[in-house]
Amino acid sequence: MQKKPMLTPDLPSIDDEEGAAVPDGLPAVVDAHVHIFPREIFTAIHGWFDEHAWRIRYRLTTSEVFEFLLSHGIAHIVALQYAHKPGIAATLNGYMFQKCREFPGRITGMATVFPGEDGAERILREAFDSGLSGLKLHAHVQCFDMNAIEMEPLYGLCQSREKPIVMHVGREPKSEAYRCDPYRICNAEKLKRVLQDYPRLKICVPHLGFDELSEYRKLIEEYDTLWLDTTMVLTDYFPIEEVVDLKRYRLDRVMYGSDFPNIPYAWDRELKWLSGSGLSDADLEWILKKSASAFFSLVG
Image (cartoon, rainbow, N blue to C red; front, top):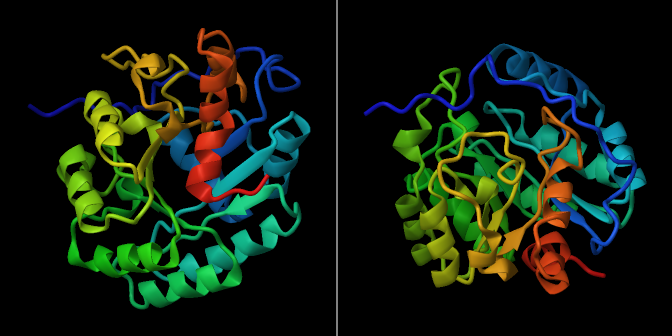
């Protein structure tokens, strides 16, 4: 049965109150899922979301994104980009490197490539040589099959260089505006094959892997090299059928991420949820700092 897309033009923007700082009582926060792009790409993304999903609340430049989060109490940011077409990855990687230099020690920048493009492995190697800390891929946008042969050089290079991959390969949120159907190229079984073939490669799947929450929860129990991030799943925004009970998760493999600035609600909505979740201080420290520190090899 064809599943109804979760990303639709009638999704709401929520005018909830935002806090001036990280909620009291929380440990130091690493935001492991923050998007940056050059101005013209950010503008295009705003237009895409306006037409196909929600109105993005925070329409900021890259420098403003970093300044906003750091001034509101985020201790460290992991910055992500993805190349939506061939031929732009090297430029994006150079941009990432330069913007991270504006905030030394506070930003971890991830590289990108367009899977299957000419020279993808070389582009990625050069990005790592420049100082970028891992690879970001988005199957919905880039329309790659994670088990395709063109992925093997990328996985192999990341494994040999001990660089992690943040890879959006969960099936949701799906949109009819994508060039491919995420349900055909994304699922937990496909990822399991990658984990088996590359046993030293660290991979993080955003959004807790939804809509396959149970499958991904089981995978982090089975594979020490797999992490999940919480991005947008703890905010009661999407109609998720399964209740997210973090107390059932292996929390040393779960990390906080906001998806800032491309969100339709207050920047701290998910942090407020975590603050009121009843999780222990030790569990919150894993989710908000220690898991990301282990995955991205952060110092301090």
